[in-house]
Structures are given as structure tokens and as C-alpha cells.
Length: 472
Image (cartoon, rainbow, N blue to C red; front, side, top):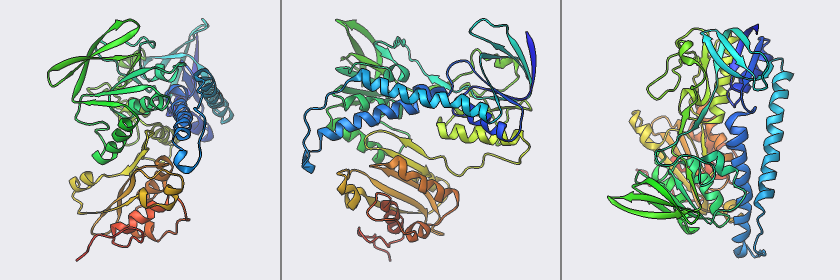
């Protein structure tokens, strides 16, 4: 057993950990990155990247099936799920393979091992191949261990009949019927992916609507699409158990005191994620956790123990890859002695449903709760020439502004390419832009991005292509 001295040790090579290690290397800090599984973490291996690959492929199928009104007719698409999975796997392999090269190329060390705290600044590394353990002593340690799907009683994950998001992404046959337990973004993204391939989708949600953390009119468009494609959404409903009957999962659901069974070939449990701290020996580090098990950090992402930091999902919501990456890079700069704090104005969020949803900044209700008198501009994609030209006119762009000084407070987009359109809005909020800044910025025509310009103008009564609200 060797003892290794490092200035910094990063535990976890997901989207929080590996950017941290890369940035540490760039800043000349002697650093080591340790990962027990695959480089890239959940996002690159079993999350963001593989899910978006399958979403893109299945949207192509859906587009082909609904192109006749554009004068284009295809034969019925043939879907080879094994080939689709192989294509997805190739993308994952390219990206994850590049992580180790980037870490090493920027001057940090990479090791595949399980890390466990022995003391606050002393960590044991255990190798899967049976090599002797090592001890790493580091002045700075970054916990970037991520999160795992939450299991619920009565639905033990076997990745065959009852699957989590990881299992759903590996399905190489198309289920005839799928039940998604949980009406959040992960379940809906994956549920609609298979629905586009012909799977009968049923969503079970305990609250009164899906995507309950977002404004209702955003989620309503997704619900409408799920129903238009033959799916069913059971709100105010609990899944209480299941039994096997002839190779089907008969899921017992309860709505308003009434119980019935819903059949499924696959049941996807997507009710949220929990932080990974088990097996880390975190109690030996002295690091404080909150009531839900998340690591508590300050504005520098430092825990209650000097020199120990945490980033990404393990510190709590929002559990987003880009938020983790930002925090990882920030911590690297803090460790290198730079004066940095996590003072972002907005973390944009994207839901890759059909239609897509993207938000940045405050909703109207959030802005009003903070004491703002709000003005609002809204532009429907139905009035967008570009949206018409690509035959995707569902949805809208909404701009939330302070009615007094016209500062942009928030932007919500639901519709085509929302995920790519939201970055301009995030930049506007981050730089403290005003509504006229968006409205006076010449946007190329015809593009979907014009909808943001028009929504901004609508907020101040200057929209050209829709009627403006009356102003007295």
C-alpha cells in the first residue's frame, strides 16, 4: 500500500468531476481524478447523451410518419432497435473515451478505483483488478459522486420488467405497452421516445398534472401530444404494486380510492434521484449532509470541512449536467486561489419532450413573489414563418420582464428547438439585459429565434407580427 500526496483529489468523473480535474490541470494544480465505474458519469453513459440519441432517432421516425401534409409520403418506417442501440453505444463510447484523454492531456492524473474516506483529507483507493490499495492524502478534495434513481416500494428494479432510466435506455426491443411511474421530465422524455415507436404509453402521476414544477401551460402541450399519440395520463394516481400475469406486469393503481390494474410489458420508475454518498465513508470526512442526504455547501461550493468541496447532483437541485460542470470548474479555480463564488443569475433547464420545453430565469409567479411588477410578452410559433415552413407550429416563447425598468427576468419556450433557443435568453438574463436589448437585436429571417425577439417586443407593446396588448 502506497501513500500518494496530491494537492487536489476529485472523486467522481461525471460532468461535475471531470471538468474540475481538467481545469485543475490547466491551472497547474497537481490533481488526481478517481472514478469507480465509467468516465463521464451518468450523463455521458446512461443519461443525457444516450437518451438524446434515442430521442433524435425516434423523432425522425415520427416525422416520417406525419409528413404527408407536406406532400412527402414514406413507406412505413422499419425500426431496428438493436442497430439503434449500437449507434447510440458508439456515440457514448466516443465521448467517454475522450474524457480520460482530456484529463490526462491537461495534466491531471486519472485512476479507476473506488474511493473511501479514512479521515477528512485521507482517502483509500481500492482497485477492481485486485491491485494493492493506495492511500491519497490531499489538501483539497472534491466530492462529485452524482446521483442514482430513487426506488419505490413494491417496484424493485430488475432492469427487465421493472426498469429505471438506465434500463429503459438499454431496451433493444420495442415494448407493446409501457407504464411510466412519475410525470417528471425523465419519465416523459423516455416514455415519449418509445411511444413514437408505437408503444402504448400510460403515465402515472400522483399530483394533479405532469411536469408540476413548471408553469401549467408548458406541461399542457406535452400532455396534449402524449394523448394525441394514443397515450394515457393518470393524474392524482398512485402505483401501489404489481403482479406477473402471462409475461405482463399487471400494475395496481389507485385513483380517488378506486383501484384497478393496468397492463404493461415494461414499467419505468422515474420518480426522482437521490445523492450518492453511500460507500464513500463520508461520515469519516466530517462533511455535513442535509435531511435528504445532500452535501451542504456554501457559495464557494465548500463544505463545513475546510478544503473539502462538493459539486453536481450530490449537492442538490437542480440536478443538471451543465450546472455540475459549472460548479466543477468554479471549484477548480477556488482551489487554485482565484476569487470565485457561485453567483449565477440563472441555470437554464431543458426538457426534451415533444414539444421541447426550455426555461431560464423566473416564471411570472416567481417574479411576483420576489416583489416585481411584471410585464409579459408572448409570441406563438403558429405565427412564425420558419415554424410553418418546418411544420412545427405548436408552442410559444414567453418573456417575463420587470414592468418598471424593463429588465428581462425570465424566458420560457415550448416548441421546436427550444433547447437550442434558450441560450440567448440565458445570456440576456446573466448580463442583465433589458427587453429592448432583445427587441432591437436584429434576428435573421426566417428563423425560430425571431420568436424571442417578437415576444420581447410584445412585452413592451411593439410586436409586429401579432397584436399588442392595449396600453393606456
